[in-house]
Amino acid sequence: MDDTAVLERTSVAKRVRAFFERCSSFPNLSISDAWIRAIGIPVDKSAPGLAVAELARRLSLVLPKLDLLDAKLRAEQPNMSAATSTQQVSRLKNFVGSCLANLQNPWTSVKGALSPDLMKCMEFWDELTEDDEIVLPNDELNALLVSLRDLRVQIESTHTNAKLKRVLLKIVEILSQGIIDYHIVGEDAIRAAGREAFSYILSNDDLLRENSDNAAVKSLGQCLGEFIHVCKGIIFADGLIHAAGTAQALVGGILKLTGHHVMP
Image (cartoon, rainbow, N blue to C red; front, side):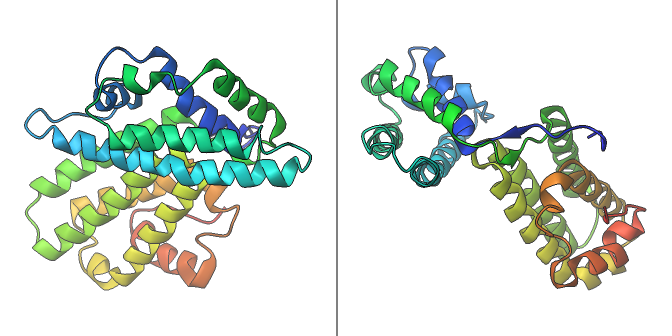
């Protein structure tokens, strides 16, 4: 990310609108297969149920964002009628609930719930709500996700003790999940992943230091450095890695060992 660039911004209304606009081009498949294709969830043919479970998890992430959108609309537009805000948000929540409860049913069984007036309402909300979230660059997020996937393969194939392998895989899982969820949840997903990953690193600091020459540990340090660089607009904005001595510990720990600097 260019340090001199003006950061693009978005809002929960834009995220909600973009999420449901994917439905407009759904093919005539089952609800689960249509969503899986639209969201881009990888499918393991030997275990297709994993993709369905991941779909259910991601659809569930939308529900609290709808509650947040309703609260923001009522706060920012106090004169807006409930018929234009809360009641329409409830329709979207009911639609998501119907999808979750009937994943194997055909998409046509729920398609009618996303009527033109409801889609127009989301467009209206988008125009009214303030853009108060930083947009992270998709190309850099995707590159980081690829790096984390490569690191997972490296960790799983490396000859190291079981505890270190478990710790490294857990950190990779936390960061990867945060990036995936960012596209639905927004900034909160990055904040949560950062806090959880950094806390987990601190709780395993001795183990990581003892294995500082391990190739997978060094690769993890590089991925962490990339994560902080790509997401710094969010991480530094709320003092995420400054709290409770986290920055000092990270600088003195795994990131310093790999030559990365986390201070802005």
